[in-house]
Amino acid sequence: MNKAINYPWYKKEDTDAFFALFQNNLANFVIIAVTMLGMGFPASIVFGKVIPGAAVAVMAGNLYYAYMANRLAKKEGRTDVTALAYGISTPVMFVFLFGVLAPAYALTSNHELAWKIAIAAAFLSGLIEALVSVSGNWVRDHLPRAAMLGALAGVALTFIAGEMLFNTFSIPVVGLVSLIIIIVGVVGKMAMPFKIPASLFAVLIGTILAFALGYQSPGKISEGLAHVGFYPILPTLAAFDGMTYLFGSLVGLLAIILPITIYNAIETMNNVDAMAAAGDSYDVRESQAVDGVGTMLGALFGGLFPTTVYIAAVGSKAMGAGRGYSILNAIVFGIAAMTGVIAALSAIIPLAAVAPILVFVGISMVATAFHSNETKYFPAVALAMLPYFANYIMTRFNNSAGEVVGNISAGIVPLGQGAMFTGIILGAITVGIIDKQYGKASLFSLIGAFLSFTGFMHAPKLAINAAPDFVAGYILVSVFLVYCAYQQASSTVKESSLHAAHSQVASTRN
Image 1 (spheres, rainbow, N blue to C red):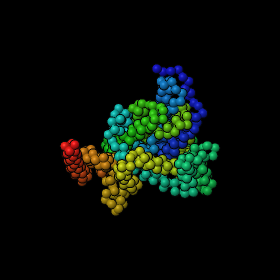
Image 2: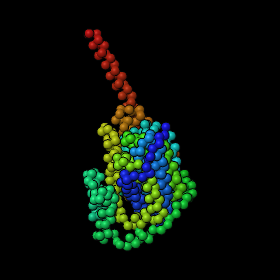
Image 3: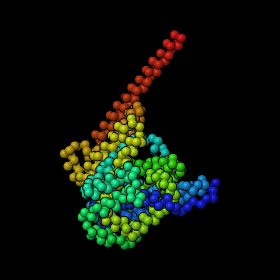
């Protein structure tokens, strides 16, 4: 039964939690803006459609999670309930930027069409996550954690930590200082002046250094302020226009969308579980559904990035936050998106000052991939990471990938195609071998053969018999693993027989 309690809308502890969540989302929004502008997307799309649409998703999810916190507080008669932290999923954001949006533009040479295809992909991703919420527990139980986290660590090491480290060192006097501030504050646990969150302090110092040393001209302030204005949040049906291409000439993008969406659902599940361990037990399936619906809602307003529950919720719980930080985050991002504040900050804050935040996020994800698994699974984690190195190289060379990368190795391009699936399959096969479950490893190899046959892996597009050499390779591996399973079973039978014989001899002697 619900108990009558006074669960506050806002309390002082919410302030610190708000800044922690705000700077995380802000870093993502700035990276989105800077990256898309760097790809040549016009400001009208970036600040007029993508940022407001992403803000809609952030607002909707944060307000709903504040509602869920209030419901839990009343149900359990507690006032110390903390709302789940919510925002754009950082690893998924990079996958959508470089694995969906960039290829869409490379193939169409049309910024608006590429945007439509990307928001169609985001809408589909949200729909899949909402549907996965029904069977999310089954997926988590049957997909080896080392394989999933290893494949994700590949994204984290290349597109997040690696890419952002390059940007960090583009202006070392700015980026290196900002990076060390973050490491001192987050890893070294040293408080920053005036108790400012380390990442926010790093951005402030980095920006000041950039202007003071001439790396950022005063004109950037005028340029940033020029973006301030009114950007209405308007619905759009562009996602449905993009579906035509997503299920047509760009159907191969499904090889990226499907596995990264499953990861996103599992990330939400794990973070909700972590929150339960901290004392606030929320419904996992409802949270996954909220993330999916929030992503779809954002796409209907022009946003193209899936959302998720953040592990930062556990930190907010430790701070003693309630639901106020979540509500304030929704309000602030709504105002920032509609007034052009995010556009202004994107122009004023140098990328070298904000990139270190993402470097730390990336290396933390890689560390988590290993810490979350037993030592014996480390080889599976490492192997699952490698396909994204190939994907990163071929993506960076863009249309010249075949010619330039081919001079390094003929295996780079096919290894990078469908890298998320490839990483998961290779990791899962390795986990099966480590556990001596050769039958399960053989099954994953057959799945790899099917994905290669249909073009989800090792092929530039979906097609029948898209990668015959890889199909043959995975089938041969599956057959060999069946042989290993037979040998394992025979060995077990022999050991059992010997043990029984020894027991019988011992019994006779007695």
